[in-house]
Amino acid sequence: MSGMKRTLRGLEAARFLVGWNQRKGRPMGLDVAIDELYATGWSALDSTGCDYHVDGRSYPTIDRVQREFSTLGLTLTLRHIQLFDCHRAEWRDDGGQPLGAVVGQTPEEAAVYALSQARKAMSWSTH
Image (cartoon, rainbow, N blue to C red):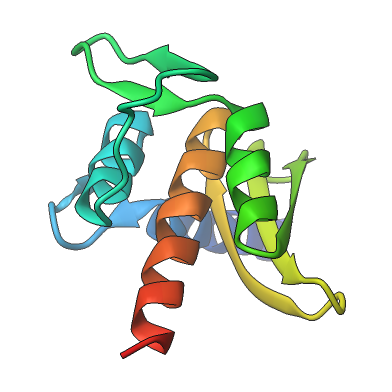
């Protein structure tokens, strides 16, 4: 039983670290995902398909995030990981090759953060 507890603690620690934003030194959340998305130059000048955070900033809904991935030539998949009670967002190219994945506490957080990471990767690949 103690081995099981140790493993679960290890898994919980891994989940915590995956969702930790090293740059800001705080737990990941929708606000951090929005920060990261805005840092890529994303703009909500066209607010179609956007929601609003409690601080007033707009961010893309899951449907809009999926459309933006499609525009980039990528497919986004979201799924709930029950073991860790988190949501995983994974994106693939049109050939089905996985290009990246992130986790979040909510599907919205995972989707927005995934878009930020995909946009960063796309900008790095063009330099």
